[in-house]
Length: 104
Image 1: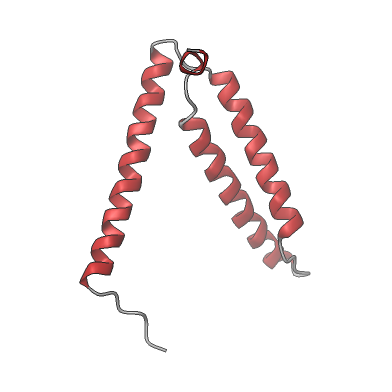
Image 2: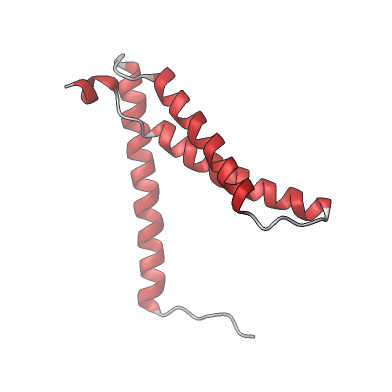
């Protein structure tokens, strides 16, 4: 089987997407750091929300995954499920808005 060959536009689209995602994550991280430095961030609330999302993501994975009887295969599935849940929780924690912007 031969690998799929992207055209010129497909490669440009992939590069653009990666640059956009990295730029948005960098800008979100900078704004979160700035808000915390200025005392406008709610670290405790952001951590609680991220922890809830991580636990809920793992529970959703555990209930929806096709489990296997082999230990190595199950550990691989768990690692993938935990990785996805933790990635989502970390992004949410990083991009949580400051409390004052919600109140105002």
